[in-house]
Each structure stands twice: as structure tokens, then as C-alpha cells.
Length: 352
Ligand code: SAH
Image (cartoon, rainbow, N blue to C red; front, side, top):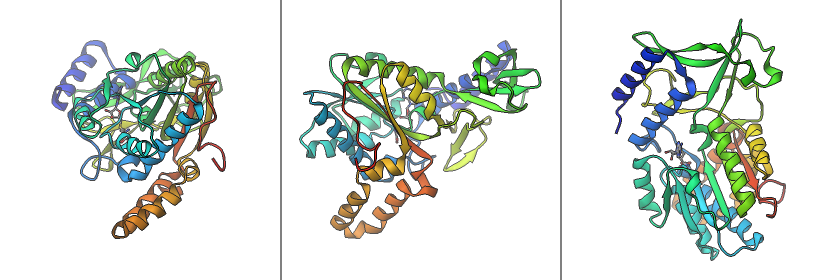
């Protein structure tokens, strides 16, 4: 397994040989090393995600899947999760689905060997894939992706006095630093940003959009849906959102590649467009607060609290963390790409 020291040496050598590398290549190499080497989640890790905050999150997603599956009227589905982390969401979802008499085949798309091992402990019956291409082709796919798209490589473009350039990463013998590329890149940026002021940044995740479009095509052909929940925006001109997290604190994106979690805001407008191009119907995006609220998180929190009076305070705190505006409620959004022949998904319109 590559250490951060080895990664640093590799990147420095590459930059010395060929010049600065795209931010996307730096991000891919850094996250590849980061996720391959350790379990980043929880209090002791670098960040905490919704399924790690409370079992309610995975349970409600399980109910969402079971509801859509039942109303679609098909016998079998494959439940797919992209980047399942510790396997917590899937374990909670499968338990909730089993209570409703629904047991799907489970397929995980995961590149990290360390996380695969943790997932195996929680969901031993799963089948693992390195990429989406090997997912089953003979039945509908109901796909869940929580905080997956934000971790894929992002390309960044920066407006200079000489026009748009791709944002690259150089190394000056001591440190990595961002620098505009030398090739004109105006054609890579949407038209309405052509006159943006110097210093403006446009970012896009071709890797994520390719996956969204390919999966939309698959669910169009096979039936099913993709539910993506992530933090992000619906606005092209959001600027530089690339961030590094380490031990629950922000770190410098360009120092210590491989040691920090690098993510960027998901562009939900672009994700929806990619889904449409692939032939899917798009539902949402809506805020996480709206989505979980419509699926009944308040009732679930109250019931859990009654069953576990000793944990009532913790359950209440988790509920607020997931839905409050100043917590994850507004910044996080949910979007669904649904097979045109399938019914409306729950959670995207008031009352259901
Ligand atoms: N869904 C989990 C984990 C989110 S972190 C949760 O909510 O807790 C991102 C996850 O995506 C990790 O499991 C990471 O190993 C995985 N991942 C990152 N890049 C990937 C890629 N290119 N292909 C497959 N999995 C990837």
C-alpha cells in the first residue's frame, strides 16, 4: 500500500518530469491513498457522515428503497451502494427492509481494501465491485450514494487575464501550490462564465457526471433508480469549494497529499442534467431536511426515543444534526434519477 511519503515522492517526480498536474489528478491520487490506507470515519477519524450519526438515516433509506421496489411491482432488484464507507447505511437499510419482508441482493462499488473489510463485517452477503461496469445487467438496480460524488476527482478552471486555464498543481522544491495551466481552456467553461472576473474559479467533476449518466442509462434499460445524497449547490458559479478535512478540522488542500480527505461541493444541476442525458427522470434536488422529514424522521426519532429512554437525549441530538438548517439539513441535498417506467420516488414532494 502506498504511504503518504511515497505518494509525495511520486507526485514531485511527475511534476518535475512533465510540469504541473491537473487538480483532478492530484485529488484522485490523494484520495486514492487516503481511502486505501485507513478508516476515516467517526469521532476518532477525520469526519462523520449521516449514517454514522444515527441508524435512522440508513433505516429511512431502506424504507425508501422498499417502498419504490413494492410500487414498481417487480420481483427482484439489486440494491447497489456506491462508496459504502463502513457499511453502516447498508446494514441499517437492510434491517429496515427485512422488517418489511424485503431482501434484495446487495452489490457494493468500493475501491478501498480497508473499507471493504469493514463492510464485509457488517454486510457479509454483499458482492463487491471495483467499478460500476460489472454491476448485474439482468434486473433493476436501486442505487444509493451518500457522500460518494463529493469524493470523486474535480477539475478546476481559473480565469486569468489571458482567459480561462485549467488549475494545476506545481511543486517548488518545498511545497505543492496551485498554478494556472498554460493551455487556453475557455471551451471547457460554460458560456455564461466567459466574462467572469480574473481569479474566478469554475469546477466540475467529469468523473461523477460520467458515472451518473452511465447509471441513468442502466436504470433506463433495466429499471430502478439512483438516490444521491451529498453536500452541494444548484449553481454553476459557486467558485472554489475544494476542501481538505483532517481530524474534524479544515486543512490545506495542497499540503500533505494522501493525509486529508479532499472533497468538493456536488453540482446538483449538472448531476440532474447528466441523469437526463442518460434517459432518466430527475426528482429533486430537495434539502436533506425535506427528504428525511417527508420520509418521517420525526416519528422515527420519537419511536426510538420511547424504546430507548436511556438514549433519548442522544437520539434527539442526532435528529437535530441531520435536519436542522445550521447543521446538515440545508447544505445536504437529495436527488433521484428514476427509470422512466418507474413510479415517483418518495421524499421529493410534500406529503410523500
Ligand atoms: N457512504 C459512506 C462513505 C462516504 S466516503 C458514508 O456515508 O459514510 C466515500 C466513500 O467512497 C468511501 O467508501 C470511499 O472508499 C469510496 N470511494 C471513493 N472514491 C471511489 C471510487 N472512485 N470508486 C469507488 N469508491 C470510491
